[in-house]
Image (cartoon, one colour):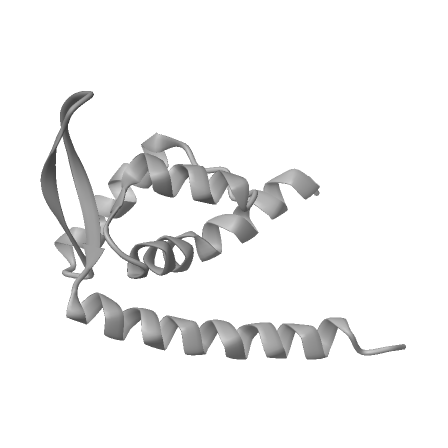
Length: 110
């Protein structure tokens, strides 16, 4: 079994939650999301992020607006919708339960 593949799958499993959490702090440009994810050691390619953002928009969890840029073409800035805030709240609760359950199992002394 390949450790690196397992680690990648674990990170992918929390990617949507992390992206929604980042966006929940205020409107944000996609490359800034990538930078924050990279700093947190969740390495994501643009080819993964943009389709995920489009899917989140299509299901009504995020929205975006175009903002003119002084340094090039207009930029898309993402925000959470009200439905996205509710969804994230539920995900956060699920995450906290999952972390507590996992820690209870992992920390059991044999």
